[in-house]
Length: 529
Image 1 (tube, one colour):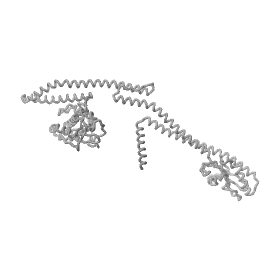
Image 2: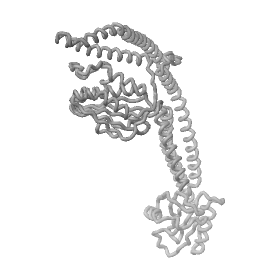
Image 3: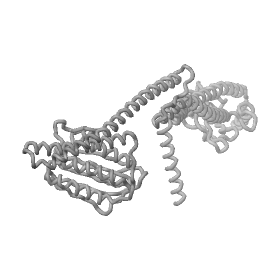
Image 4: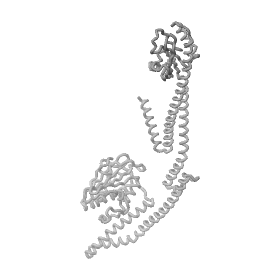
């Protein structure tokens, strides 16, 4: 049983390897298909030629046998007509002489066998013994051919059937005819021509066809391999160059020689690469200018903002001494200053992400504490909106993360849920498994329309442009949260239905540097984890 299991595992592994090669290699598919089709064509053509040759040999054998049997019968009839014997014993002796000297061929392996039998309709009282040459067996002559000879004694009758010779079954040509024996009446002569030589010829032809078919199929496979290699190799080189281009090596190009279609492919590919390189460099230049502009503006605004903040704080602290309208203006000014500072901080953070300057400060963290801190910090806002926040977790949720960034992600998600939750309960789910941790923030508010789940992380995007940012958001929170998640090699995904609510799922690897394959929590309520 263990040997059978090992053989089974080897067969399964080989089958999987073949399937993988079939899917990945165009050259393998083309060569394999060509070889299979070549085998089919060679088999069909070989079968047709084999049958045609066999039929031709059989027809030639029948014609030769008929001609030879006609001559032998004429000779035998002439011998009987020239005989003067009158007794049955003498007639039997003459029949044996004719059989031995005229009808039976010499040699140890005769080319024909002869059987003499009394005619079916012979009623003469004088009977001769049945004769056979080389002990072929009287039973070899079937009733079918005897009836044919009896029905038309003036013509030769032929039939192809099997005969037992030296214990082997061999196809043979049976020629039936008759002679008139003096006194004894009509006797039938049956010539049996075994097709031993034809069988040897067909065996040789079959072997030659088989060997030639295998060689031809192999050569067709070699030709297909050479031809496909000439086509596939440039395509593979194009794929390799495209991969290097995708990895950032923009100076990579294909070798282009000649004037054929593949050379045109290489030329067109290189032209496309040149165009992409120019556009990417242009975009990179524009991006650097934009990043520098955002960073410079954000930094430059810090100084006047500090002065305005000091004046605003002074006015805010003295608002009770002012006229009520002026006091309310001081409160509004203070709120907008807070939002302006938050916007500048977010712009600086976005510029760091764009410049690739963001870095992680990793440490082992139990995310239950992080979530609890976020919920506690946002509880006053939730109380004002009438929402309750519930945390659902089982056991420690350990992960190696930058807690400051994860806390910022969760704060953005929870604040977003409060703002769009319409005062309904909010649930925060936590779970770990399969090398990953997941946090799902679920609300039951306005939800998301179709197509909006992929747009919520766009900078400054709002589902309803007319809707006011009642909590003072900057429009960059979810965009920054997505960048923080990507910095951890994690996922940040959204799901929602209008009137049902929305779910935001953060999935992070438990160990830094590992890749995610699945999430311990479902994104949508009906999805299985």
